[in-house]
Structures are given as C-alpha cells and as structure tokens.
Image 1 (tube, helix red, strand yellow):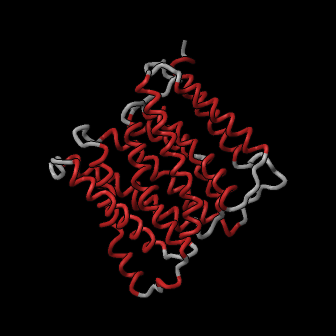
Image 2 (cartoon, rainbow, N blue to C red):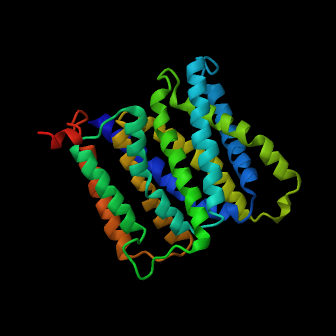
Image 3 (cartoon, rainbow, N blue to C red):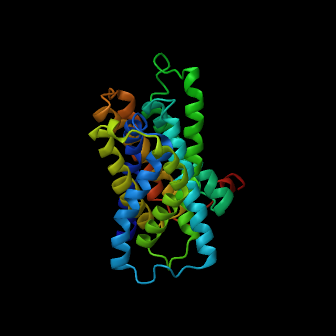
Length: 307
C-alpha cells in the first residue's frame, strides 16, 4: 500500500507541473518562435541532466537496439509532437480552451491503453474514467452554456491541442515498453537529449534572425521553468509513478493536469475561479479515489454485461 501511495503522489505532482505548461506556454509563445522555444527548453533540460547522469549513472550508454527505438518513438511523441503542437496551438487558442482540450487526456489514455497495451479496464475504472471526463468538462465550464463559446478562429488551435493530447498519451504510457534496466534518471536524460537533437536544426534556423534582446525577464523565466522544472521534474515524477501502477490507473491522474491549469490560470492570468471549477474538482478527486482503491485484477468492464 505504501508503494501505491508513493506512486499516486508522484503521478499527481507530475500532472500538477504539466498543467502549468498551459500558463507558462502562453507566456513563451508571446515572446519566442515555436521551434526556438522548444530547442531552448531541451537545451536547458539537457544541461541540468548531464551532470546528474555523469554522477549517478555508470552504464549510461549500455542500451539495447529495441530500447533505443522505443526511446526515439517516445521522444518523438512526447518531446517533438506534444511540445510543438502545444506551443503552436496556444498561438491560436486561449489558455482556458487549451485546458478544455487537455481534459480529454484520461479518455485518450484509456483508448491508447486498450488498443496498444491490451489492458482491459474493469467496471470501477470505467466508472471512474466517466466521472473524470464529466469532472474535467465541468471544471472547464462546458456546462455554462451562456458563457461558453469556441470562436471559429480558435478551431485550428483546439485541433492542434487535441493532437498534442494524443502524442502525450502515447508518451506517458511508453515507459512500460522500456526495459526496467534503464533507470528513471537515465530515461529522463535520454529523452531530454533526443528532444534537443530533434529540435536543434529548426531552432538554429529561427535563432539566426531572432532578436533575443526583445525578450522580457518573465519570458526568460518561463523558458527556464519549461526546461528545468516542467521537463526534468515532471518526467522524473511520472516515471517513478507509472512503473508501479496499471496504465488505466495512471491515465486517471492525467485529470489533475487540467485542474492544475485552471488554478494556475486564475493565479497568473487573473481568470475567475467559479463554482464549476470547485464542483468539477470534487468529482475528479472522487474518481481518483474510486479508481485507486479498485483491485488491479478487477473484472473487465464489458464482461460484466455478459453474465
């Protein structure tokens, strides 16, 4: 039980940090080109990780060909696709709408878990997933019909955010395909380096004509946060947790992300906290409690209807 509580705490902390990406990403996209911002993010993350890896990892370059291919696929989904689509999407949509799109994470992870990892969620987990989806919809104000609208000009941004969620779902679950011989610290380092390599050519291209003197201290601070905290700490927390629970259970904790995004939007972007945020947050917490207390070998959901 202690191991599970430790895993749940790590997953929650990871998603709180990931939720902050919507707020800090909005600040970054107002000051930096997308590829340059992404390259700087992974350059900072790599600089943070290198001394840690040299200090604590003795078998840093001993990985199999299969693990390397999985690492490249993982980095492409989580580093390149997610980062690029989030930063680009935030150019066309608002922070609160981005939060609405990230609300689909639990459902997206449930689909990915079933289709690619062959984990069949049980009755309580399916009910919990439904509660999560309902909760994040309420958190983001979908039920406020009078005030909610999606301007036509934001549709492209919302579609980009949806693509980012799909990339993130694959990324968050791919840890299960990587050998347990690769430590979470080494895995975080590999992903940071691969992300840097993937963005390097395009970031250099944009850097040549970019006026760095025009960037505010706040934007530089956001970039530093993106690289050192969002990339390094969030990855470390997530990998510590996801290796100890099922994919469907881990998926539920992605619901913490939009709640974090809403609260941080209220704090930094001065958006109003409403009764919908409070009610949706309570529903999400109830869903997490329901799913985390379910048995790992619970009867699959569809079989319960065949009796």
